[in-house]
Amino acid sequence: MKPVSLRETVINSVHSHSLSGRALSLAVSGGPDSMAMAHVLITNNHEVNAEIEILHFNHQIRGKEAKSDSDFVKNFFESLDVPTFVTKGNVRALSKKNKMSLEAAARTARYEFFATHICESKRNSVLTLGHNFDDQAETILMHTIRGSGLNGLRGMAEFSTQTIQGLGLKIFRPLLSVNRESVLKYCEDHNIPWKADSTNFSKKYTRNSIRLELIPFLKKYNPEISQSLVKLGSLATRDHDYIQSKIEEIWPSIATTSNGVIVLSISRLQQLDASLTWRILKKAATNIKGDDHNLTYNHIALMLDITKGSSGRSVNLPGKVITTKSYDNLLVFKSDSDFLAAPISNQPTLIATPGTTVTERWKILASFPGNCSSERSDLKKRLSTFLNKDLIREPLWVRSRNPGDAFQPSGMKNTKKLQDFMVDSKIPRIDRDSVPLILSNKGIAAVVGWRVAEWAVPSKGDHSLYIEFDSAKF
Image 1 (spheres, rainbow, N blue to C red):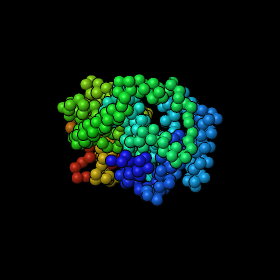
Image 2: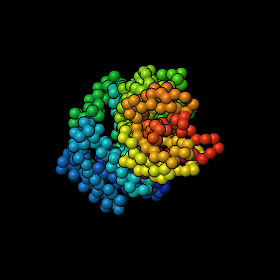
Image 3: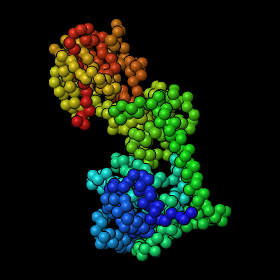
Image 4: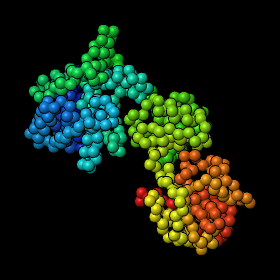
């Protein structure tokens, strides 16, 4: 059987992923891979009917050489009347600021440019990259060295969606089955110019060291080590996809999501095999964070450890994600989430009844006769309350708890310490200072979202005063 050419591989890949007629943003560095990829797509656009543009990012690491590459890409593709967008970024400064390796900072800056451009262009474009077969082998080996699980052993997918800058970026890699030798031959056969990146030969970068030293060394033991690594990636993908299907199947029975908060049932988690438990935890953190970048084995281990500890324990994860245990639940949310109710001052603020009261972080809505949506979300229920209509004749205030506060919960004849009430009601420790308290001259009329005072309960069949709190991010 005649081997499939590079040209046929790229075009077949476009069709197999139903990308004909789509907008494609080609990331072109000026190297042989991206130049060959761009050449195939541009010269054969009558077969793929794509709306093509070129994106190039200058990392400013190589000085004049990098500027020369940028000029080369810009001039070459503009001469073909292909829309070309070139920008630059201070990768060294980013690396220093965020304490990242130069490699990681370069990737971050580059992908942020891609994501921002595609988002602002509003073309729903697919980012198209020139990674080849050998790049795939290097990636899988690098992930293996770092102790990755199945997810990392899969390597790169030919088509995937990644969340970058809050954008679900579609990524297409049509050269993943084409080796580097074939790419170079294609460039030679078609007289395609390309630029060599001098840093590709610097062994101080991990990927370069793997390509220049480790893989040649491993070839002494297995001349087809790259093929074996890519095969490993294929097997890992098969197993990963099966396990992931199981995760999606059991997720609804373990997790609930509302207003940016994922609540996991710890008792149900503990019934699962360890493999599934870890993936459920990672899925929760990833869903809240928006991606799994910088989420490591150690972070998931911390989440698992919390499930075994006492209620109220918390851990901070990358991306401002917080995980906390609340009795039999594990809560996962962003630190700026409405779930972490915006701070309430412990100094009283007078509430307009009826009317709207605006504080620094809250909008407080009081209506009479009380009315609200017939279907309230869990968050709305937690941040609203119904009170006896007689309270509309009295001044009402709102504040957070103070030491020594006491409260007479509905259904009880006597008062109890507010602290004891919060513990008995299983209000998460992390939440207690943010629970709004409504007070009248008689005392605490309501612990909003949890309980009304016995003397403030609305009379059955009568109108009531409804008070609702909205985060002032309105």
